[in-house]
Length: 369
Ligand SMILES: *Cc1c(COP(=O)(O)O)cnc(C)c1O
Image (cartoon, rainbow, N blue to C red; front, side):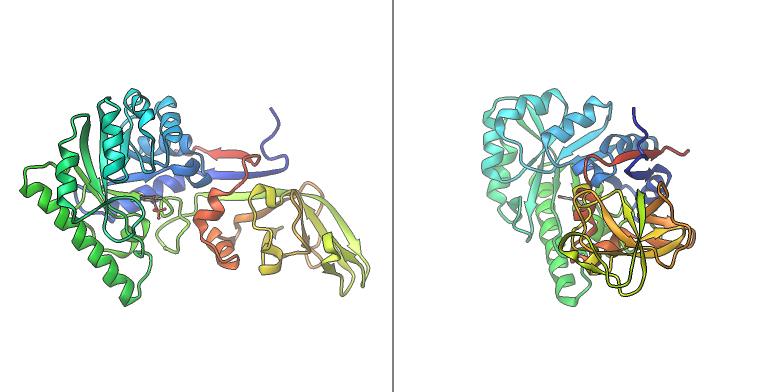
């Protein structure tokens, strides 16, 4: 096997993950447990090592996006609840049953098709309280009646998803409160009509960070668990580094890279790094103020990013040599580049950048403990 650090790689700090899990758990109401959202390979952090470490920390509930992710977790030995958050077609009901996966019911029609497959499965009912993505309209009690009556569906949970809980504007806070009110009204209706809602959950990261503790059984944490939010109490879990391939000197007036985008206004030294947009870095980063850490100093990305390489200006950093490690995301000494910074520069969210990190990056997992 080649050295994972030979070209470009991510480093995963499982102790930071454990710290975040404990911190978030501490902000939940008594009796409310963390459900770790490990979809999209745990936001690029590696679903299996993440889930295994969280199990050691006492986490017993996980959420995946789709059937394949759920099966992969089970095959790696993850126990406890695995909730599939996305749509699974009825034909896969035998697989849901065989792997003891709990399926989200996206709407009444989805529930009926799963039931008609004739295989007993466990489900959580998604309630639409205002996001209008998945879910049975929360006030449609007739539909809830019918779903509870379906012979092959065992309802073990009821949940909803908040769509503006990351925002603190008065308007958005009102909308979130209306979603909460609709959700608890539906849960109350179930209880009053003799239906067991099972595990009740509505908060994701935004809801955990911005709302008071909720009277629920779970809170589904994704991005906050990975420390990619602005919160002093949480630590980044992932770092990305690459190597210096070569260093070259350009005379004043020379240009470099595709489109000859970089102009040397003075004699300049450029380092070529072994990472590019095929590794998941946004191609516009050099033009959006993107920078790396090299020898403990910030160096600006310059020129056009290539598929597998990029340029940084190291004119003011003496001693940069081929083979040196540069940090795209992470900490060197006192200085740090956070994925939130990259996201802000590129007009996106950390979730997208993390989920898009390329599969050819090497993996270094610090197991800690
Ligand atoms: C992705 C997702 C989450 C996790 O969201 P974060 O904001 O990353 O915590 C929770 N619930 C549902 C339904 C999701 O799709």
